[in-house]
Length: 312
Image (tube, rainbow, N blue to C red; front, side, top):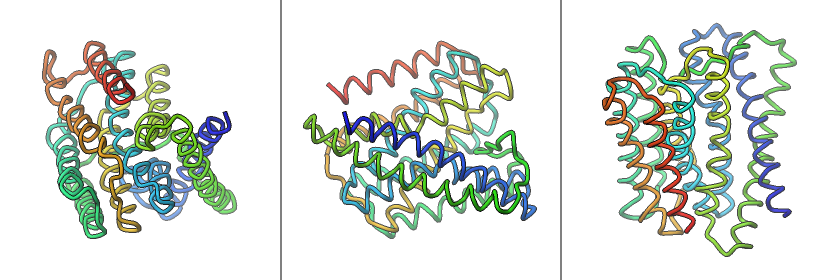
């Protein structure tokens, strides 16, 4: 029971901390007169990936690398299978041309690079983490140079300049909540895994990854309910690109990540590649450049099968 409370408490702190950090980051960028598109693609993207990043770094440093890896792989599967699946069941979304020009190819390339780095030696080394960060930097440069709309542009509604004391307060409590939340989440996840006699990877790829995908799910559902700007497919793909290149890249540069549970290499990583690839035919068939409830059922069904296979 205590472990479940730790996990719930950790997730609540991560969600609150990420939100406070996001407010501070956007306010700081506005103070520095950085264009909104640049804020959306850099500052906001890093802030919304902060929960995954802090959990992964903390897990790797504390000697639980499978939590770090499972969190990222599971989050990427949940973003497309669960979050996108539920969103398009609730409301159709039209897909922009940038999907097949940049967003999807870069996500697949990042996923394939991650696969290549980890599959053969079971470890992401520091220099491989650096290569991921360089690729992310080049991708952001390309977006800023050639694309007018950001693939990961998630500017919040209340993007107003904050007084300096408020900005600093959000920054400090946001950072503290993220770190504290990650500590609680890791303790709870490891405790739960030990209690039920399953690996940390299983807990990470199910409970932890769904927890860190809750902000994306909440944002998507709220956007649908309010009939506001359609949550774009680009936001979720952008989140997946950041999870691989930024979260794993930065974590590996601080502490090389070694696979402990081989299930990650024999099953999970193939599910991540498969569900990422599945997006391409779904976007073009049966209705070109539109995702609706039928595609949502396919994605959600795929996610349910993934959970069943992983847990059973």
